[in-house]
Image 1 (tube, rainbow, N blue to C red):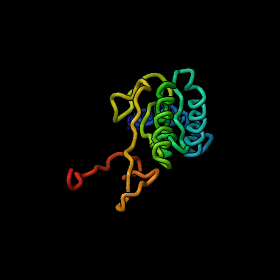
Image 2: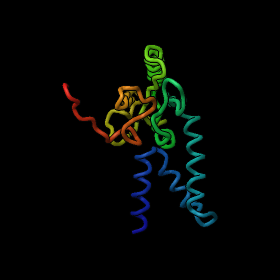
Image 3: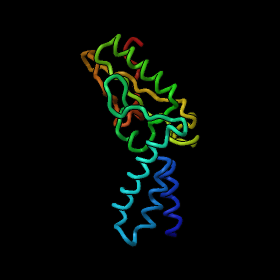
Length: 169
């Protein structure tokens, strides 16, 4: 039964991060020498660093996790390696965000899911993000007074919050 539980965790972590399942397997292998959680965190950190540095060899570049005009909406996307796109898309997204910020000073364009750092792989819940040529962008929000709220979304991840129809729409 333990093998099935570990296999389920490996599958879930791989679907979530593309490399998390490998970190879990490494931590399992090291658990006799080290405590499991520190081994898992250390393995994931090492794999994460390797992924960030190796991604360009696979035709992917990371979008900025922090920045002025364009950045990922949440650190979650960066930690889980879901912020990679092909260089052409990274350039187009940065240019578009810069133009929006130039037209509307102070605007921050928030990116949600991009893709994984390595070769095409399914990225749940998306069907279209496997090739690095897809990027979800968050809506721009205003407060009750109509003033722009930079860097804000209605949910922690930018998904799963829905807007109703406003009066007159």
